Length: 218
Image (cartoon, rainbow, N blue to C red):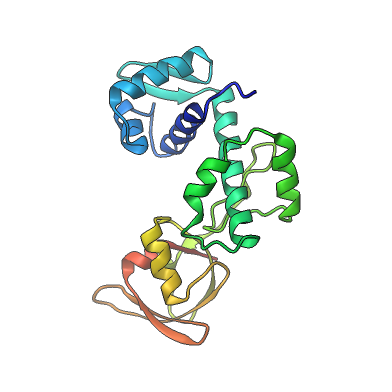
């Protein structure tokens, strides 16, 4: 039986992601907003997780994961992203459909199942959204991706992932016919609004600057 509940794992994962943009500890308000729960509930959970030794927490100073807490968080991320690969590659779900399902599957505790799932999928390095998948030792693959808005006319690049993983954005680019691994030919960039004329599968498309900022390529 796992030492941690589903809710505790969700907290650790949220703190892990929030800490990547925080200079010091992750604030209670930031966690509350991320998990859509009350600050008082967050405070109580942080105290519980501190007692379990997976984070450091002081009032007004925020929360920081311990080494053990980071291991649990990364393991949860690993399972989530592997299950997303399985749902898209093997069960033909759309990449905009899989996040909520993977949120449920990520809490399965069997390490043997996770390792066999990874092997069955061919040891993928990235999930369907282009996010890196850590290996069983918690090591993430190196990525040299850049956003599409940093590219220039005449370049041909390959879609590596997306920054905005909301269902709305994923449906939008899927409707345009843009998918992971597709080649994008950059034809022109408008000086006025920095929108981009591209070609995908021989079809010309106009992308807004906001859309370009949210597509990772290499």
